[in-house]
Amino acid sequence: MDSWLVSGGRPEAPGSPINAPIVPASNYIYGGGDFSYARDEGTPTWVALEDLMAKLEGGAALAFGSGMAAIAAVFDQLDVGAHIIWPDDCYQGVAGIIDTGAAQGRWTSERISLSDTTSWVEKAKSADLIWLESPSNPLLEIADLAAICSAERKPGSIIAVDNTVATPLNQRPLDHGADVSVTSATKYVGGHSDLLCGITVCNNAELQDGLFRARLLNGATPGNLEAYLATRGARTMSLRLRAAEESSLILAQRLESHPNVEIVRYPGLPSHPQHQLATEQLGGFGTIITFDVAGGLEPGEQFLKRLQLLTNATSFGAVESTIERRAAIHGQEHLPAGLMRMSVGIESVEDLWADLANALS
Ligand SMILES: Cc1ncc(COP(=O)(O)O)c(C=O)c1O
Image (cartoon, rainbow, N blue to C red; front, side):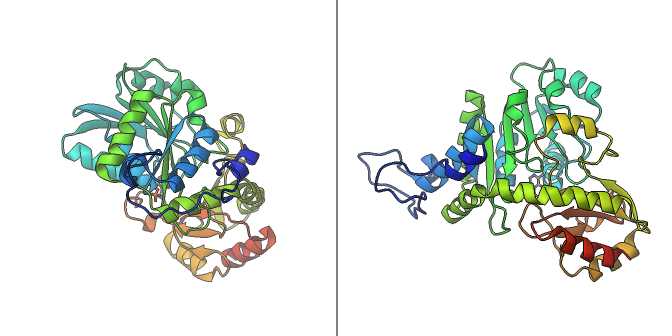
């Protein structure tokens, strides 16, 4: 897939520009071609991104204005009274959608620990939406996708996997039996912290139709510039990801033996409770490391202030390394006060370690 990422979705006709151009048009002249109105069929710029992502994950792709727009399109598929099962640890935007809808009486929901495969399999029988996020954000817990996706389930139910942290290069949820994979292309696909975009990849025709209608009717469309930048970012995703993963393992190992660090969560460490499953299921262990600075809030804040190379900012999956104290984020107050979520970028690993070690001392 690395070569596909570099060359896929490009125009093919002789004389074409080598990159699908940014096409700033809301409408098209009737009488030929695939497009009439951009909110409906899209533009050649988004279609290039969709072609790229479709083959990467093995289904039909749709591009959205953000990861959240793509996620919301999945929840739009539920009938009133639906039952949702979802992870204990999960991106807080998803929690926002589920909690708001539950308060409005639109659905009921139940949270399950991602490591509790038995409960997922049992409860899949009566759920309308099985929402998975693996690895999860921010605690990097892993779901056994093959076991959960092959469980007996209610007819017409949907299995959706948020593939953002895993990345579409390291994990193809549809291969395990999921109906739809959702990725925030804002993160690793774009890779440069300069866009918002979301992608769904689906192999269920009825669901794909529903997602298409949700995008059309909610106007949840991507910008042309953003779609162009996401495609351009995807061309180097493999190089960026592999370089940052190499550094991540080194940093996770060093953090684990640092006296001022309490717990290090990284699926590539043998100490991760699901290291074996991560090794079998993922093509790589990713670039997020979650660790607790000893002493909690105050030492954690001091540590962040002393960093010079790492940027104290949210988000992940970009060329630059970022780090934040997660309990400071709305909806994440339940996390340990000193818990840091670090996204490792492509800087020199020794420079990153020097910065971390200095701030931790
Ligand atoms: C796991 C995960 N899924 C989805 C999203 C939402 O993506 P976006 O910010 O592009 O809407 C995020 C954002 O941080 C995320 O971390």
